[in-house]
Amino acid sequence: MEVQVQPLSGFARRAPQRDGFVFSQGLGTAPRGGITELLGRESAGRTALAQSLLATATLGGEIAAWVDCGDAFDPVSAAKAGADLGKMLWLRCGHRVEIALKGADMILHSGGFGLVILDICDASGAALQRIPLSYWYRIRRAVENTPTVMLILSRQSAARACAARQFVLDRAMLEWRGRAPFQTIAGRKSQAVSRKPNSGGAVVLTALGEA
Image 1 (cartoon, rainbow, N blue to C red):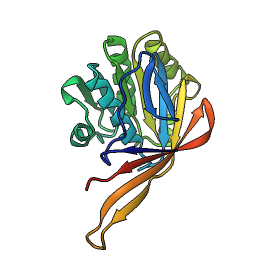
Image 2: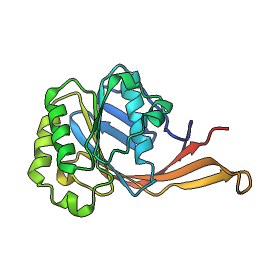
Image 3: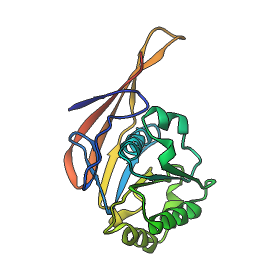
Image 4: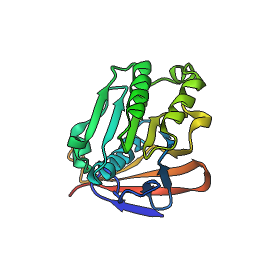
């Protein structure tokens, strides 16, 4: 199954649903009132998928927050993917996981957000393991019975048993056009698998480069 999308920096947007945000056909939904983890290695497409949800939320009239642990959020690419930056909060955390967690917790308890993204992609496995499981239970309780989608971007599972959904992306394969050294990216393909619940099959996500 292939999902064609434009531009390369983002995936297809879908209208917000009452029960959550749909990633793409065949992959699944990030439910409201629960934690969804989007996992994978560097350049696997986690940020692009998160930006597509950010665009879906803000263009649908909802307020979103991006908790940026590694100072990696790029407003230009987010706007290019369709996000309304005037309807989002960007919290920079200076590579400090504890600040990111506290920030996400405060945002969830404040209410009023349709989407909260916690980007801890640059955190090491050791740093994630040091986070007490009780902290994730606190975040899960904060988002339960609310209209908020809590999305965590990470290399490996951080919320563990507290996550309602887990999706894993493989490293993207790039396709090039032209001849070296004047090549441009023609497209990118990533494989995405639903680990929780286990779908048993992979979905191929295809992003097309701009002409």
